[in-house]
Length: 144
Image: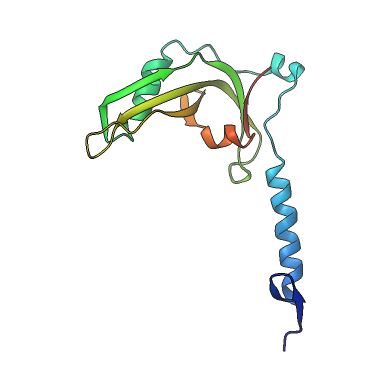
């Protein structure tokens, strides 16, 4: 029989306390892994060459997911050196490349424009990655 103790949210089992503690510690470790780059690290990092045809690459990237890609209106910012952290599932570490803000407004299934949505796209190693969520959580950033 489990021994129950009162808690603020109800009753918690004594057997579940180590599991909850491990979950809290793991969450803190994962949330504190921000993408920061020192000036010295940025000077030696390989960001790759400046992307020459980044506008076509970005449009092709979004054309694969939009309902009506021919109606899309793009506002593509200038690429800047940036870094993003890889998740632990992908081995951790940092990915260096070029990050650019991209505003996209396209038609939905009903034929109306939905309004501009700003995304952050990382161009690294010839591939494009949507790092919008990583950028807002601090796991992707512009290099100094």
